[in-house]
Image 1 (cartoon, rainbow, N blue to C red):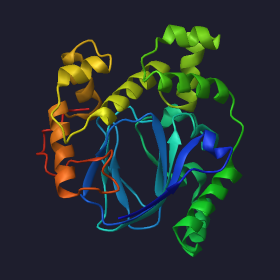
Image 2: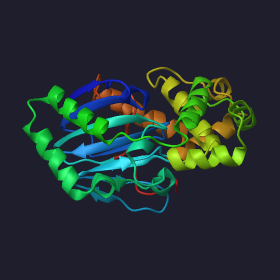
Image 3: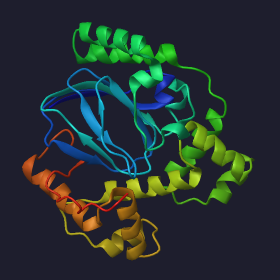
Length: 289
């Protein structure tokens, strides 16, 4: 697969981690993306893909692309044989200036990009992307579109600062300390977070701690789960295992099994660092989410 990415110019860099271009044959038909403290916007340029979001939701097809606010549960992506898209990895708070609705309405419910920006606007953007002279120029087209759509958002500075504190502590910060430092009530802070991120500060802190823990695991090495749980600040290994299953539907052991399979079958792949293949897991092996 071809993967090209870059950090956008200011002021987008305060909202966005990177813009990317992705094209090629996915390593597996179905990949799971564990919860992450960030959002995602994809403009699709190839065949439709499918996503299954939160608990009780069936998978849905996305032809034009999708918008995903900070997920509180794992997402399952089903890819066509060939995929082609441009996208944006957005900071937890960064999607709000581009949304016409509160982020809470989209929590664990991915929507098409057409539902957010309108059919005509998306079609025009896809035409400009198709006419671009390669990945770098396509990312410039997407960056210009985001700059054009950037709006002032009430409460963004508060949510950005508080989210940054949560990230800096790896999620190990009390909500009481956050509200005291911000000089607002816990109710006010929670509402701002739900409006701009889609989840409460407490939930974001849980996601941040979980994501940091998952990224610290080296599946190629022996793992002491007690040490992992203790190092991440979980009460005990049972608490960590329960949290892992609640977020992903997998036990920590199952997660490592699928990560090791990825490493064996596709060493050095551009998607190696985060998604996990779930094709081979038997129906019903995943926990209900």
